[in-house]
Length: 148
Image (tube, rainbow, N blue to C red; front, side, top):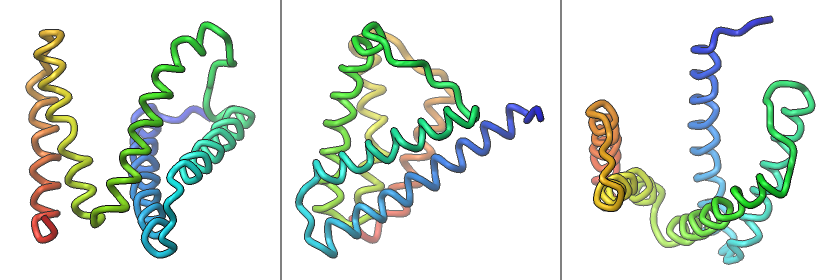
């Protein structure tokens, strides 16, 4: 059965958003309700779950993930390390702030990244991308105004 690519894209965006929201609330619940301070354990659990989910989807033929190779590892190791730093920082921020403030901080982060990219590489972003990012940032700030 062939699925329209736009439907696949919409489904992927929906599941990404749902997973992001669910992870944020679950992580906040764990670090505040149980005063759980072992961010690395949460991170390890998320990575193991992600691996199992990706492997299951791969075996069912739903997604195509390349097999592991030393060449791929050389490319992915720096990416994985930055991801680990990002998640560790995010878990710490989530523990220290409310969920709305955390979401504002998370949604504002593309602005400095875009600016640094423009300064360092001289590469700008299209008008549509700039407007989209600005809309997300303004929306997040309006949403989190009561908690800022």
